[in-house]
Length: 235
Image (cartoon, rainbow, N blue to C red):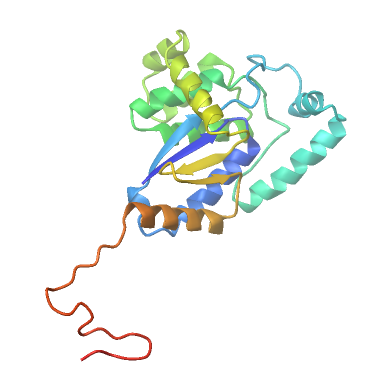
């Protein structure tokens, strides 16, 4: 089963949604046969490489609200994140443009460590207070998940994988994806938002059943012979 996930590194609900999905996967019988592919999405493609103000100030500017209202919104999502075992530290968050971080995720996919890279980037942003807009910081994070520093630096100093990032974003537009996180199971079932783990479980089970239909094999004789139903048995 292929599970594609559109998300942005700087999206607090995307990290929460990831944890809820992981809860569902941990209880899913066929979890080892689920291929997860992280797709790029940018909530603010015009963001500066590194924003000079605080995350509360940035959100206030974007939504036209008071910074105190932004702080209250962040406090609310921090409490929800804590319920999923995440430690959000908005007092440390350093906002910036996520485009280069998404390019790094495509490099990580080529080396089979995309999920690890995504996790490290999300933790770096929401917990560690590291800048996802700083190239050398991204290189160090890449090294932590096993990527080569020189290769990561070369990618970030070029336009490598920029086309892949834009292709993910265009596909999201074609699918009508207006927000993230967005989860697409075998291009058939979709879950939008950081839904409860139970809903992810339902989506996993339905997608698996559709891609692995039960085929009944019967003998050449009476197909009903030796079958018990709710109210009778054939003999």
